[in-house]
Image (tube, rainbow, N blue to C red):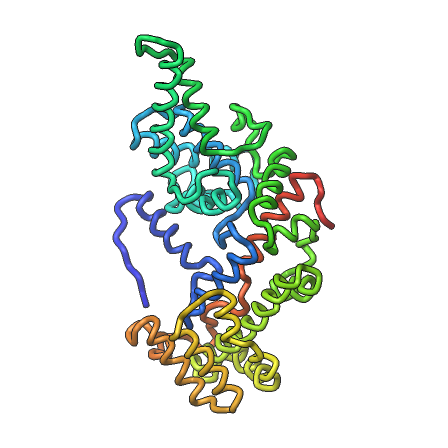
Length: 401
């Protein structure tokens, strides 16, 4: 499929490029519709993470900006506050580029200073900020939070005036105190938070920030693999994939978590087999990598397809009859050597998800035979968790060799 657009300004063009880049994130392409299981395992192991998160520092930058907004520092007009938040995030990107030249992971560094991104840091990190208890009010969107903070400010100001017995007039101190109390109601930030935090803003967590973020994650994600890795100071640099992590840790973590890791690993092999076969079919058997990988899978199919599909879905509390039917049918077809049936199952699955007009397997001549479509093995957001943990270690001054 080819895309076209008309752009009238450089800003318009950059926004289109930014939206398109989102489609290139790991995990964005899911030709066979297993995203529900992938995301459920990811949330179980590494809650609060996302494939588009870059550096851990944004888990603090975003709350710092929003805390200022909740304190009333950006004025009192709702729309103006939201625009100011956006601009402050943009300015933080510029400061990071200025203070940390050459560092990667700065959101917007491809388009700054001329433009800005479609997905702001606050959007990318908001779920994690709430999951880790940095925002103390779960379930609120950022616009909801601003409205709620304005209400709390007004309420606090009224209470202060009433307790003083004033005639209703207020002063700057009342406004400051009301705003501060409102912000404390919505945000928890490091004890060493300071009002001039922008002056030496860096991509690296301070020691206080690292300790704060570690504590928040550990206290709000108990029982997860993310929490275990932090509590046991696991050297994340030793592992280049979820499979390697699973192999090393599944017998060390608590039994239930270890079992879920093994289920995820088993499911991963089945998905990989389906993705290899998908690319084999797409290329009419001409993709050399897919052909070689499929030869290995067939020689080891009892191992590669050993997953208990029903246990995976039940353990994750997923009820999806079409997905279950596809996984079981593909597994059975491969195990019994019915490869024509397996190929038909893949084709029908993609049609079921996208419709015939968008299914790539229905228009194979449109694709080069050496192109690989989609992912290979699932990552379950381990790469994102690995970056987060490594940033915390660096902030603590405990870089792992």
